[in-house]
Structures are given as C-alpha cells and as structure tokens.
Length: 437
Image (tube, rainbow, N blue to C red; front, side, top):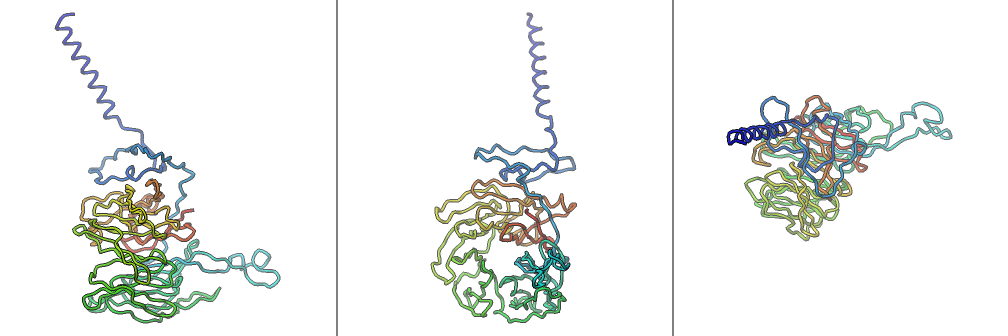
C-alpha cells in the first residue's frame, strides 16, 4: 500500500471513531415517567446546583450502591394522600386521641348502638388542635375527616409560637407586646369536651403568664410538662412547668444565653447552641432534675440537632446542610447523605427511621442563617430514611400533587401509629396532613 493511501485510511478510521464516540456521548437516555419512584440513597435525588434555561433537564441514574441495599418495589411505596388541614396560617398544633360517636350510631339498629342499653357506639380517633396565628383562636378537626371547627373564642393578637400540652388540654402562646420588643408567654387551660356535644367555639381560654422574654420552649414526650428558658440578669435559667399543678422547678442555670432545647424522652433534655455558619456549635444533655450536664457533640459550624426518642441517636446538620447521625454510646457518626436541616425532620417512634422535608435544590447561601432569616426558601420533597443504611424512599413530591405549590416543611410530626405525617408550610404557615398508610 502506498504511503498516500495509508494516510487516507488512517484519517477515515479516525473519523469513524470520532463519530461513534460522539453518538454515544450525546445520545439521551430514555425518559422516566413521573410515576417511577425508586428507593435509593439520597445522593441520587439531590442536585446541589440545578440547571439554567428552559430545556428539559437530563434524567440521571442513581450512583451505584455497594451497601447491599435493594430498592423497594412499587408496592412498598406508600400511596401518598396530601390534604390541607387549616384554612388559615397557624402558630402551632398538636395531635391527640379523641373519643367520638360512630357515624353509624346516628342510625338505630344493631350496627349503630348497643341494643340492650341504647348507648351509641364510640371510637377513639386522631384529632388535631391548632392556633390561628393572627388572633390566637383555637380550632380542631379529626385527621381522617377534615372538618375544621372553632374551639375557643379568646383573642390574643399576633401569636408567634404555640405549643400544646396535657394531650391537647393546655396551650402555651408566645407573642410580642405593643413595644415590639418584650416577649409575652401565656399558658392557657382548655375546657374538657363532653362526648357528642356541639362545638360552638364559645370556650374561653383561662390561664396565667410566665416570665417575660422566654427564649425557648419544649414539651415533654408525655405532654404533661414544659421546659422553658429565660434570662435573669446575665444568666439563662431553665425551668420545668407542670401543666396540671402549675408547679415550676428551676433545673438549669448558665452564663451562656443562646440555647435551643429539645425534650426527647423522660431521661434527658438536650440543649444546642443557637446555630450559625460562622460559629462552632455544641450540644449538651442533662436529666430532668438538672443533673449530669455533659457535652455530647460539638465543634461543628452551623450545628443543628434532633435527638431520637430513645436518646441514643442525634440527627445533626452543619453549615453545608449535610446531615449525619451521632451514636451517643459508640461516639461514632454516620453520614446519611441527606441535604436538609434536622428541624425539617421527625423521628419514628422506634428511632429506626426519620421522615424529612428535603429541598430539591439548596443553591448558595449561608446556612442555616439564610433560611432562618427568610432570605432563602426551599421546595421540598418528603422522604423516609432508614437510619441503619442511610437509604431512603421519596414518599411525595408536593408540587406534583398540589399543582405547582411549593412546600418548605417545618414542625414535622407523626402520630404514634405512623399513619399520618403532619407539617407546616413555612412559606405561608398552613397545616398539612400526609397519609402514610
């Protein structure tokens, strides 16, 4: 073969190779329909930067999981049902069990009432109470049947935060006085309901005030007590309030004044330094008698935490919004691959799973500062994450259900049977309910 023909052959073969590689490189994978949801590690669903323009984003396959995790089948993914509960912005809510007369009991016959006594049959079901943000009026409804009804008529304007105790029969409301500087905290007792009585909303809220400028409040897991922090002189004091007796016992005193409390179980209360990306954070624990105060975890910028019900695990996040689990017994941390804040999560009762509102995109910001200050708002998906494996299943993308309405989920709560997940949309403070079963 001549030298000239050899050169031409080499050029032709090179062009063929270039075209083949170009075809394989630019070819798009087949589209995945919106109904295909896989259980994967969080990395497969999280894009930290997003794209630009209006073109359809490429569909990316999840990274290879070497943990041995097998994605669940479609039958294992819950049939999510999302409902708006409140018709107004709320300051806080609670979930409790309430007795009601069965609907069939309104009809005479063996299905509706005891044929011997004529007593209507009753059932115990989940109910919700919540405080209207603008005026402090309390409303309630059932979880399985949203029928919002006014429960109280006492008006307290511009409630910032509300916490319920005593299984929904006590409430703590926090608001600013007219000077827009002094924090008032009111503790009210709600009247008991008689079974079958109409809810006219004429109940008055009676109670008393706690010291001014309370900085933080947390409710005990049995809802019978509250722990609150307030300043006295240069120190921060922590006090336990018994709702039934109104008895107050001081159990904490610290020269450091910036704390966030959490009461995960009867044995421990945790205190985390208020977070900032520009400051190292620490979390401490002590018992409800104020003893055994000790450092658990720290030296982390932007530290936010959520202790598990069993007290053995701490879900924590940092300034990058990366979330891990710290084991208090072994002092080992496991990175979950979650990009969110622990306060956008809730533990399952068995401390095996967490349900989290996870931002699709986080963008650039100083976290968690930018989110606290309202400079950044997220569009979340709802995920259930296995703590042992770090793998999760996306339960719901609210945008696909709500026709484009974004949710920035906070105050997540699950009932004892994990039949429902409740949360507040930080964007407008409306209460939502997600059926998990």
